[in-house]
Length: 161
Image (cartoon, rainbow, N blue to C red; front, side):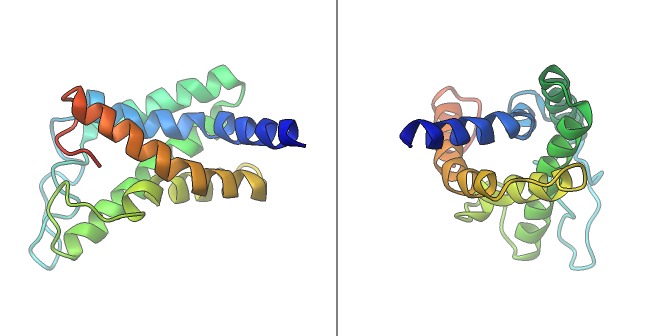
């Protein structure tokens, strides 16, 4: 029984690998011109802010799509990657509306924004098993915090969350 559970956990993580890659690469290779081109929303605040960049978005989607291609499903890789970065951008939009600055922590939103976006986009290509969703919603916040802390310690990230 335990072997079966671990097998499903591993399958869920493997399925979601393009989204994990897409979410990680912008923090390493991003920077440059913001995706919102420095535009302001009607409230006078940045639309997305300086943390969501064109280079980071392209790098994330490309990297995640390559992983999906290596897994044998480029379309799913593209959808997971694009959904992950869309979820992240929506989170940035909401944080700017709330008056929060770049890097301000919002527990769970920061860890699950890309998961929800990726799963929504992936569902256009194939149904996502419910046990995969459960695994990703439980495992990802812990893994996300661990990876971000490592990035902070390696001086790749400005904040440890």
